[in-house]
Image (tube, rainbow over all chains, first blue to last red):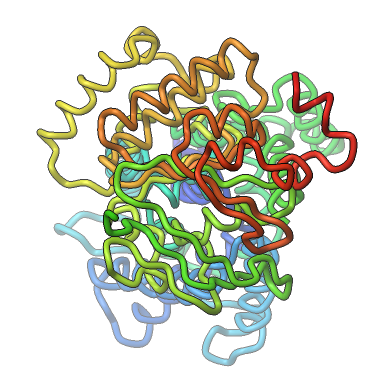
Length: 296
Length: 246
């Protein structure tokens, strides 16, 4: 039972990192990304492959996974985020599909079977095959990231990000380089997702493309919306709730999807801004439309 | 004649393939208030966007203090000393009033001076001190406009671009906004002002330009324009009489 609870808390921790990073893009830049799981997958595969083929230690494969995912984020962000409208949603959706197809078809990634026998991290002589140590490792990563993002959001840069979210054109005439900010945040978010992927790969020790498809991207997006866009605590809560609740509904397996769907519908009716958020997702989209009309 | 602070030389701007500014030339001298008048769709807002770098002119030159700024980014232009108050009271509604003001100084690095300026602005507009911790979105329309102007002043601009500051405000508040504009001029700020309310604008302005379908159709001193039938026609079309005389 303890093992099971630790497993749930590790998975929650990973989703917290994913939801937090996606929330940066949605809640602080006002952009929608539908391919966040692709960066998660890139991180997982990078870390796994370098550990398996080059025997790279975890302390190197983890940052490498983050950096590679971040580079892909940068490459995707530069052409897309300089454009005015919400192209990011379409581009990231496409990117997610492409990454999925590549992982499924390349020989080195093991195709649909994925990769097995990924070594657990070796760090400070601790045995990370034990779920206790691994949950502590994930908890440390979560705390570090929450602390980092909290500082970012409450800094001068965080204020600039909120200004961009509220009204981008006005932010520009304040002298804020909005394109650079959006690209930087998207890159950071992609890197954090890659880091989560690395933590996942070395924990679960076998990975296949199924874990990193559109389904996962939508799940992360749902966590952000549930917790509340633009709220760090909201993402933590949203990710934890959506990892734990399905486990609880598991007993009524036949009704699991029904209960899950009903909860989301209830949320959208009674609490569209999410549990702890400030702006609702429908507001974001209607604002986007109004803006486009006015400026177009 | 004082040397011009801002000069536009036959500027052409586009929205995509839509040719909006078709050779706009105008100038603003230091210390002046210049009104830019014209009907909806004449290209006034586009002119301001071109000056502040939100749009890049495809042809022509924008000169500020003798330097060509038409290729500079919006951020660089703010640093040169041009602050733009966009139309529609665009305050950052999910941020506090104080945070809005501080964002106005985003391009500056002289943090101590920014603090002093914040104090001074709050003394000048006491309502902004009273509401410093309140979210800007909760302010009334007039208060939001004051905030938008005060926020632009935090950049210590040499030139202030005001886009329809009286839009949607009650007559009493319109008076208040124009009183503020006049005080800004007295304090030494140069202003280029777009207004629908041409009479009110010409009352505070030194000179004015009238725009029609993407170019300047008329210019002159405020007093001249006030009497000019062309202005009334450009604005109000036929049957302007009753509206104008009000």
